[in-house]
Image (tube, rainbow, N blue to C red; front, side, top):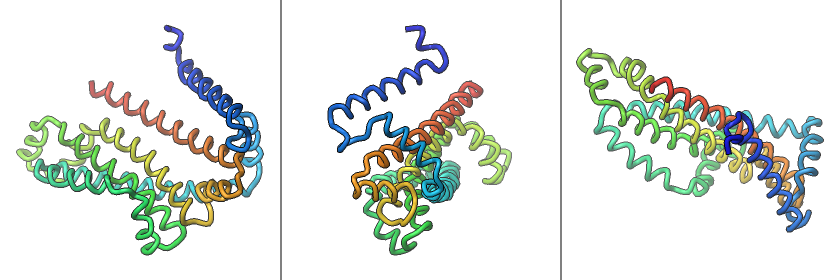
Length: 249
């Protein structure tokens, strides 16, 4: 199947297969369970043409960007500081893995008590989902570095900041991007979940309201929008990661 190697053919084929499966499920389950692809895209275009839908898009986008910035910066800070020494990384990683195993939804009442209902709670809940994966991948990326690099930094008496900026970050960047890619997806999930259970605006709130009203067209439209956004950014991050690995050799 050499034709799959043609740029753009494989993604187009995958999208076509998913649309066919979606249409098959619609024909089997009926309109009360799921909206058809055609009606979903028509409804989504209609919603994008009005101002009300964009209010929810902006609410989710604002909360997600804040949460993603906190998750990436916080995860990098934790991972790079722990990656400065083997003892610190061996101590931090089990704690992070244990924290990551906690169901995040169980923490949501605590988040609401601390931040209340609104933007801060959505940001906090989204950041909680993304910060730990970024930190874990960063620690593992630093651990995979040749020890001679860190020893050279100590011999040259570089400060911790200099070692992070000139040794750890450039060498570990491809693996860090992998963590950022995972953190991006989990932060988006956390932000939308936060809107579903404790917000008065946003795509998650719109999903929850549509479920109560059995508005399958709105449910599928929001889902398609979120999937398209997540897939586009993840694809771009994956291409960047592969480019970095090729450059590093």
